[in-house]
Length: 505
Ligand SMILES: Nc1ncnc2c1ncn2[C@@H]1O[C@H](COP(=O)(O)OP(=O)(O)OP(=O)(O)O)[C@@H](O)[C@H]1O
Image (cartoon, rainbow, N blue to C red; front, side, top):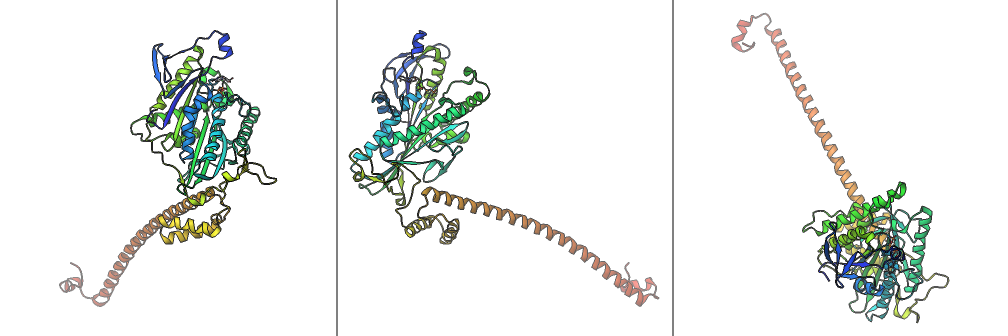
């Protein structure tokens, strides 16, 4: 494996029935499990090497074991991980991610997503140190630069935010608590079905949107009494083929352009990350790159699966996918992977070994579903305790009087001391109040600057008026003096008065 945080693999699917029938030739020559020969743009043989190459005989479990096992293990240790499938339409991205069906497929064909889920619960259940845990699922798709919640279709334009504690996250995305793998798979299939609903409603083809699965894991451990939080993000990207080749028109053309834009934004981010000292990495250029910011920027582990058609009729698209993989392999982020340790107020409230039934299912409350849609609820935390914890945390970095002021403001917000408030709400309320304070301070400074300017102008005006008044007064004084002198010595000739200074020379 490379010394990068990003593992890059290539997968050639088998020739399809149609390709076989058309007598298509295979466009690559296998060298070994890490390299192959492929003709470049000038029709010259080039050797390409990756962390691993999966050929048509590779099994789904091979891909999982190489690509995903380390990521699942890391997530349980509190390190975030992302797995991305990239390639042209029909190259095998969804097959690799989901297999032929998320719910109904045999062990051989089971995709990465199901295997991740199975292993995740297996790790949590069998670890002797882990006492309690929560696993949550969110599922969104990015279509025409909008983030749509696949677990709640009414949320069709979610925003991507960043916080110190959580990094990049999708604000307001539905999070479903899942108890075990079969529960997870049912929820996943609902999300996938929602994607299909969208497809018929909007006449979409799956390859025109990017699909993002997010599993958030939190667990407490007896070993060090710490709470760890890790995230596994799986991304099934839209097809990477060129617009010209699709012959698209109208809305389909717009879709293709948006996909191309977000994929080229992804390429630009990767290019920026492969330069020695990137000045600016354009994560904000698309929703996709923003969501992948943590994955590519070095704070988490990432794996890219470049899916290729083996057919010579798709050789240019496959070459472009391979080149994308080659560039990604050059990302040399420092492996600064620090486990996310969570403040104890976020302790997972959920499921322990004891609560599992023999099949690994946690008990459900009567009348409630196995899964519950929720945010990070703090229901186990006592109201006053929560307030004290938050305020003492704030006191570490702020002045006492500022904390008092914030306390007042938070109370006005009416969120922070609600024991049922989600940590996310608290975080956002804090950011909100802080940013409102900043905005109001900036406004105050602007107003003060304006007032100072007005006063300076006024002052200047008054100074002029004063000088003018002084001059008038001086002239009036002179005139009065002249008049009195005239009255006193009016009958005396000036020549007589001059030597005594009563008239000017
Ligand atoms: N490794 C594989 N083994 C067997 N069949 C495969 C493999 N990879 C892909 N296929 C088959 O090839 C076809 C296209 O694959 P898939 O739908 O995964 O492509 P895709 O890249 O996700 O396309 P799109 O971008 O349109 O969603 C499917 O019928 C799938 O079953």
